[in-house]
Length: 135
Image (cartoon, rainbow, N blue to C red; front, side, top):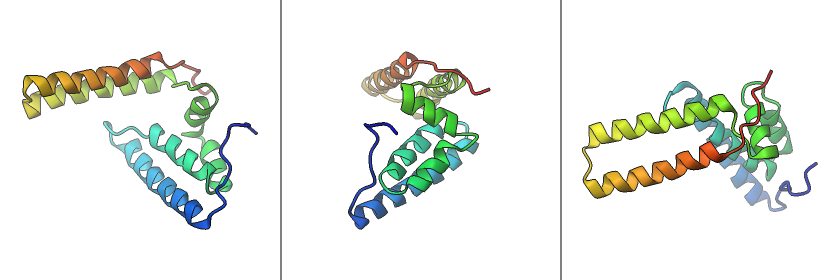
C-alpha cells in the first residue's frame, strides 16, 4: 500500500461526509460517461479519493472497475492521463470554447479571461505523462 495514501478518517461524521461526496461524484461521473461534453474520469478520481478516506471497499471497487479503474490507477500511480482521454479532454475544451464564443457573444475581456483559463487547463492536461492505454 502507498505510504502517502490517505487512511480512513476516524470520525464517523467525516467518513459519512466523504462517502456521500464520493457517491455524488460517482453519479456525476456516470452522467459524464454518457454526455459528450462532461468528463467522467476526473469525477471518478475524486470519488476514489473520498472513498479512500471513508470506505476502502468502495475505493477498491472503483480501482478495479474495468472501464474506469485503469484511468484512475494511472492518475494515482503516475499522474498520467491516457492518450485517448487527453485527446477527448483537449477536443472538448476547444469545442466548449467555440460554443461559448458563438452562443454567449462575450465582451473582449471575458473572451480573453475564459481563453486564458481554458489554455491553462489545456496546458496542464497536455503536460501530464501519457501512460498507456489498457490492453
